[in-house]
Structure formats: structure tokens, C-alpha cells
Image (cartoon, rainbow, N blue to C red):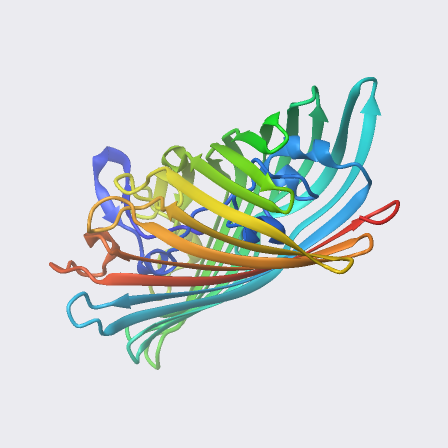
Length: 442
């Protein structure tokens, strides 16, 4: 999730197009609630089934199921291929390929009893939004952007879940958000030849609440809510524009520590049904309030003119500085709440003394931006996963395939087009989880 393309509101009600660098580095995807190969193998439908070490990232009430101390880790790898095609001829106009991998989740949990209450506490790290990737954008033979980004929006969570009655479980987590990203970009076109860097550091906190209710042994109903919050951000930009034999190179740099980023709250509900002891069916609906998300004091850097010093070409109020914009679209006319509908199944097969879980899932994610065809597009996905139990060690893997199509709005194009091009997106994600439970066999 990085800054997207845009027409931005500026003082006095005027509108101005952001530089092409911002347009090219758009990102298209919603943000999923949690982590873990078991959950994503079931399509991410885990709000009412969160009963393992990743519970704090989905529904902290699920921590109350833990009966032994355990540690866990999740690793993720993702590729995204986005292609802009002519709407009539389907000719390729631009390609955008990203590849990245990162540690996604690490936790330690321990059960406890307090009088008649039973539950568990957990400390966990999660990379909620990853920016770690290498990215190549090509337009024809003479336009190329290469970007390398490291980091992400990370969360250190302190959570607990309690079983307060036979059928009711409650949970809560305090989330400390930190880190950010560093990006290095090289842009080579006939008009621009530049190297640019961005450093984006944030800090903030929010709360996560969860509830699980089991009216009977086969059915779980779950609910989850995350609060919105405003984080403090320090943002730094640098750029070098390369001249030719007659024009010298120029540099520009600027930083602000009063940037503020408001990230959205989210609510979700789910149900999980076990018609048989070895079969689990789950269904979730989640809504994230991205229409309320904004970034204040955002700025861009223009190329300095020859012999102009950086202090003389700082961001201008009416051209390069934006007091308040929606995030991440940076377009007041083009940001919506996201909705996720997810379904999954897990069948446990017994082979002699081995338990072998098989998982499948599907989902539809409504995006936070509009398509020229009207309204926000919805991306579709299929998932599959499995696992292996080796004594006290549980190892799970999951594969996620997601695809979608939308048409670019006029304000997303370098030049207006009466028949705007289509963007075809295909993403692949792989998750690997390991959980070790102390104190005997699983």
C-alpha cells in the first residue's frame, strides 16, 4: 500500500495533477486482517475459527483456546503482475512487476488461569502492510522505472483472550505501529532521467477487540473490531536529475516531521461450523473504513533548475505541498471503504497415526478506488493449503491466487483517453507457518 495516482486538492479549491512518479507507483490491493498459512489456506475466513498462535491478528478472543505455551513464525513471499492494455486492441501499454518476501508474523503465547477464568496472553510481531519488494515498470522501449523498497507498517501487539463462560470468549490487543519504508527509484525516460529516494517513518497505536460465541459445540460466531488512529510520520525525499553535455545535474532534498497518517478502523463478523469432527466450514465479512483514511502535510519534489540550490526549490504550497489528502489514493473523488467476503473449508484426513489437514478457500475483495467503468472493482481469489503435525511441531503452507481487472480514470492517465485502458492484475502469495507447542504431543 503506497501512495497512488492522483488529482489532489490544494488550497483555494484548485486541483493539480501530482508528478508522474506518483502516478506510476500506484498500488492496488486491500489490506487483509491477519496472518498465518492455516488461515489463508481457508481463504482468510478465520474470524470465528482463530484458535492457534495467529489468533491475535484475526480475533484476540481466540487466544483463549490455547492450553500450552507456544511460539510461532510465519514467512511470506508475493509477486504481483499488473498490465495496462489498450481497451480495443488489448495491446500491452505498460507492465508493472513486483517481487518480495519477508517475515510476516512472530509470536510467543502462554496460557493462564485466574480463579474461574481461563485464557492466554501473547506478544506478537506482524508486518501488517509490507513494502519490501523490487519493482520494474516498463512503458514501450524507452520508458523504464526500477524501484527497490524495504520495510513495512509493522505492529507489536500485546494481546489476551479469556473464556468467561462455557460459550463466550472475549479478547483484546494493544497494537503499537512502527517502522515504515525506504524506497530507491531510478526513472529513465526521454524526458526525465533521475534517481529518487523516499524515507517514510511512522509511529502510532490502536486497539483490537474480539468476541467468540459458541451456541453449541459445532457452531462458532465471531466478531472483531479495530480502532482507527492517527500516526506521526517523518518523511524525507531526495532526488538527482541528470543533465546532458550542456546541462548540469541538479539535486533536491526536503524533509518534514509533522506529516500525519490516519489509518482506518475495521469491523468483521464470521461464522465457523463443524458438521463433522474432521470438517470445518467458515465464512467471514470484513469492512475497512478507508474512506476516512488521510495523510496530512504530504509533499513531492520537483526537479531543480540548472544552478538552483535545493533550498531555493523546496516544495511550494500551491504546487508541491498538500495539507490534507485521502490515503492511499490521494484523490478526494476516488476513495471508498473496502469489503472482503471470504469462505473456506478444512478437512482433516487420518493416515495411520498421521493427521493431514487439507484446506481450500475463495474470496472477493472490493477495492478502495473507482474504475472508469463505474464504482470500485472487486478482485477475486482462490486459496489452497495443507499442514503436517510432527509431535509438538505444526507446519502449514498456503498458496493464494488473486486476480482482477479495472479501467483507469482520466485523472490516472498522462493524457485523457476517450476509451481508457484496462488494468489486468494477477497476484501470487505463499505463506509458510511453524508453531511449536511446549509440554507434550499435539
